[in-house]
Length: 143
Image (cartoon, one colour):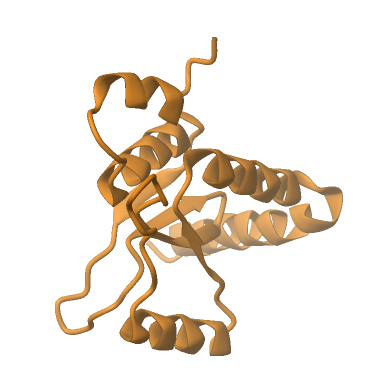
């Protein structure tokens, strides 16, 4: 048995269909156990922003959670405002992702981790780390 939460185990406890909050909670807990920084995102001056930001090793994922489809319940859908916000994010080179299922989220994040660890992607982190170290050394000289 996995030590990560699954929706099968949650269904035994919860009566009725899963809510967006159930999906979100399981995903956030799983990601945090894997070393991801995870924060609920809100922007009082802007509506329709993504639900969560996940960060690890200079990588950031912007995630929107939705209610999963269940018997007699329609799945959650992006509002017109959310669709517009996602379009604006993509125009700036960001890739918002939407999940209504823990297993799909987990599969996606494992692929992201695999991509982050690929040899061709390591120089970005190495470059950033080197830059930070150089900045720290330069700063020490000026004190």
